Length: 136
Figure 1 (cartoon, rainbow, N blue to C red):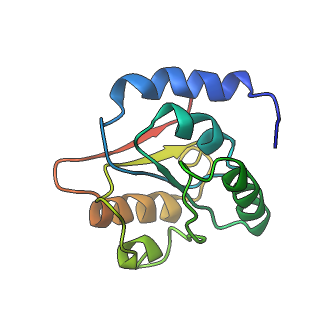
Figure 2 (cartoon, one colour):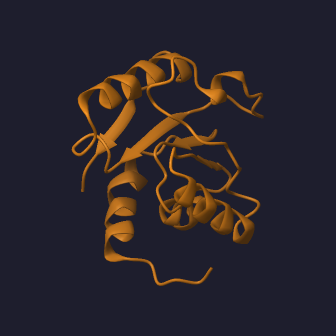
């Protein structure tokens, strides 16, 4: 997939680059089309990206992006933030997650989804880490 990157993706990158942990994987929830993963993943080397979403169309788009960036985007199955246990909690990763990125969800999602997001972040992120939630 070779689509021009939107100004929005570049703006997100400008916000996140200074605060990105120096190593270990990032988990992106929700990932939407996967365009952020495709843009961020090569720029975050040697770290890698684990995008996920609940929407089947988005998951298909993420898979297409993953095919083009195989070394930096790892497939992770769909996620519903309302689930009391997330698949990533039962997945063996090469390294523990270092960050969870959430872009453009909390300001449009129902409140229970926002609560589920933070409940899950508390379970999957190491102590002392936080989930960075922004709408840029």
